[in-house]
Image 1: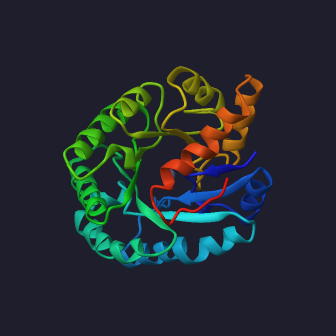
Image 2: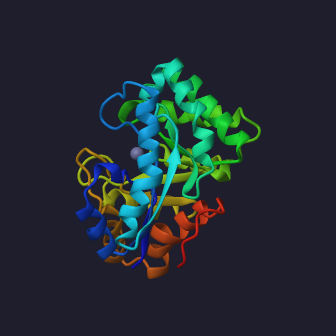
Image 3: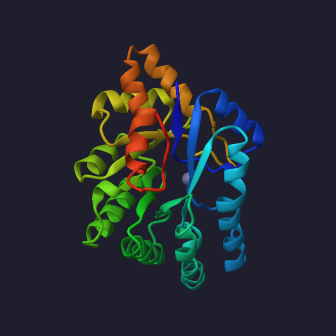
Length: 268
Ligand SMILES: [Zn+2]
């Protein structure tokens, strides 16, 4: 069955992963800008990373018939340095013009700090000014609920932002309901053992329904599974979900959300 992995960090993955994903039915991915595992020492480091996302990765993916799209931002962890963050943000508008850039992301909060929130709000304003989609990272573990509430309030404070054009990622059982209730899209990030497993994702779909929700691997340089989307398809099949529902979660829904940006063009 065809699928889209709408959140995966392929700069940290091997070419073999592209091949395995293609064999499992992956036809498109979107890669948000993120923290690469270490703090970059200058704005130039981000400039080169953005070039890698927009010039090199689309070619690597195309070798396996996978369409590669990306998102631009300075991630919340490195946004703690406001001066650095603003310098990086100054050249993001040029990248937003490129044909594979879908919007601003993954912005959000890491430690829910004051500086993170300032830069989050500036990214939201940048997205509003350039009419961009937004992909949001929510903090993990005990700060997730508090961080998700802070993020949704900050988004609501900007009247130019439509909730239907914002996806809030890494939702879990205790945050998915409030994200959907406020009109946002919700992303479930699948991990092999901890946090949201394919089994928990299937439970969440059975509890909260399958409107405005997608699944992704968020694969990066840490322990993760780039095949977790097809593994969740399999778990849903095992439980007796219809092919239509499985395809909706793993292909139709991400395609509908992402197609709000006219650059996203993936056939079903
Ligand atoms: Zn990510």
